[in-house]
Image 1 (cartoon, one colour):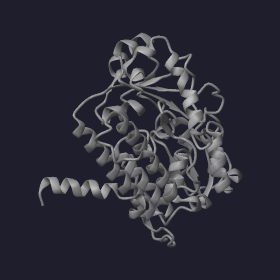
Image 2 (image 1 turned 45 degrees about the vertical axis):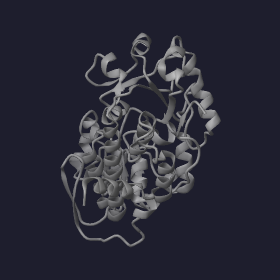
Image 3 (image 1 turned 180 degrees about the vertical axis):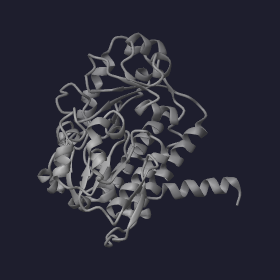
Length: 377
């Protein structure tokens, strides 16, 4: 087979509907013992699928991998990040999974990832923890580590293919949802490979600025360098304005408004969400229609000097849901960003359809609302 034929075949396969790669998961999971390798390369032995699980973070990822039924195996989770910070989203999931409201909160707001006494009271046989449980939160996690309760570390924040896949497979193996986890891991690998190949073929570096839109247009929010949205821009070869304007090697912080004007970005992304207590934020999510999303994004065009930026003049101002980052769905936000930067290379790609299909396959709630949009109609 010629190289061009091989390339066409791969593209065609990756363009197939997600439903074409569906893996049935209705079978009763095996009770066999298992050795799990987590995102840190640690090996954890379980006598069978865990039946009393504490989930410290990555709650929607756990739901996608384990399914709604997976929450029947949970005995507690850290609720604040979901139920308080993203209350509207949580209410949808709680309506589909009534058990969520009844489960104990084993954390403490923004301050504590896990409260050891609360966790121990639930007698879990597995803890699913993020990497900072063994880093910044090591002191509070130490009593749980010392208790001998098995725990696996999963890490979507690192934004690497290997850790995304390892985390997904580890959760699936731990809860007895191996087939479902494998389908998610395979999907992630294939879609990331396709996005990166298409972006590379464009052979150009559009100058791009991205900002978290939770403060409103009157105050400049953080932009990102070598992490989160900045890392996604680097993956697809964009010229991220923050890379030159931010003094730190990596991180997120606002940059001077003059630096944005001097950089003259060709594309601007302002992230949005249904953040609690953020009345001036760009609105996106399940309960937001397109008109509202655009109306809350439009004030950014009135910032001093922005009318003269190439991105504004050409109508290349967009919004994308902030929760579609450092997650199992970050490939979809990357797909959306890449499609705006490289429209010819991504002409046959529909990121909204990707997110709709992901809901249909892996989430217990129906797709609704607005998650990404261009300001110009």
